[in-house]
Length: 173
Image (cartoon, rainbow, N blue to C red; front, side, top):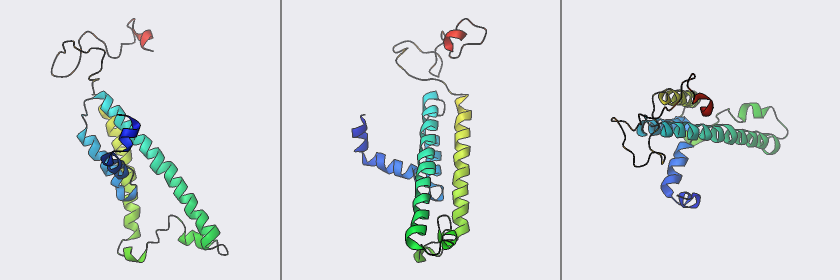
């Protein structure tokens, strides 16, 4: 599919908004569900999962978080309390001053959920990297139409990663 066609899909938007949600570990749990749903024996799917996950982590946790904190702190210093910048330490970003209708949520619960989501991100990437060791490259156009052996998609005449002593080792590098 083309990029324009993908951007017009409402399901794609819903999944990406869910994956990008940094609150209460929702994004981490959605990636955990995706890891459970993909074929964990397929090398391409595992590598693609890791790359998409790290890309979302960089943009959502890194850049979007940085922009949000900078904008919140600038708003606090410049507009909200220009005469009392010490108030921004109490009411600025990260202080978890919730609106009155969310008073029932304990700020410690928010902190623990953010920490739990971050730890789940770390664990998911390491689990996926561990599973890559046992995965097989499946599919592709190189061997299209040839007879496959075994119950897994693999060919017996191709060495996937050449051994260091073999003559194909230098070609592999």
